[in-house]
Amino acid sequence: MAGIGAWLGLYPFIFILFVACIAGVIWAAVDITIAGEWKDKSKNIKNSLKRFYYLNFKGLDVSKKSLTKAVPFGTCLAIGTVLFIGVGLN
Image (cartoon, rainbow, N blue to C red; front, side, top):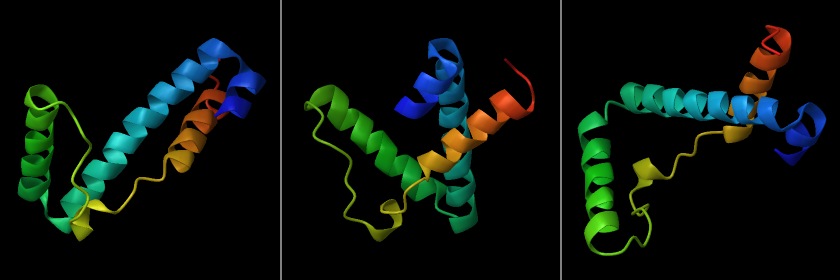
């Protein structure tokens, strides 16, 4: 990420980071939809937000196997960079 920021500058990096975050959310939503676990995931997120608000946040409960799958954020950064440079948004 620092390389992208040093290469393109601050404002393009902020744009790329924003696009990468959106791509990561979409990626996670597609993974959850394919697995058919919307109800379970939303319940876990809701409970974690309650803990954050009421009991001082201590982290997500990742003891369940379904929560251990990560979104490849580096790929999302590459998608954002390609959109910025390739499409000509600069």
